[in-house]
Image (cartoon, rainbow, N blue to C red; front, side, top):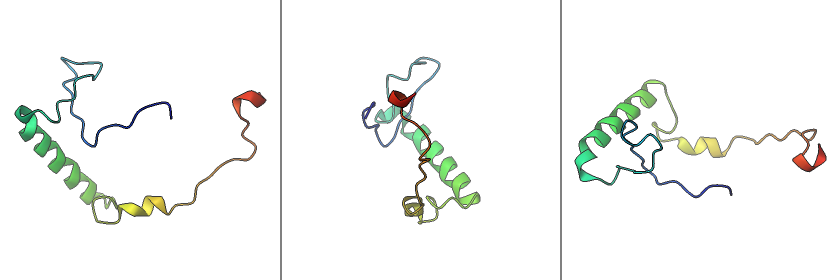
Length: 77
């Protein structure tokens, strides 16, 4: 894996921290902002019938995977 696991929740002040190095999600000063954004996200997901917001998020794990057998690996180019 090229990258480490990311935290479950991330919140950045992109004006002060454009490189997104300081995760503010655990900062109590931003609890209200986090709650507002979470509510807004869940409302939008429900409005669009997103399975993750309606209790069926595991459906994405049941989709078949696709791999093109003709797609060469970098060492085959």
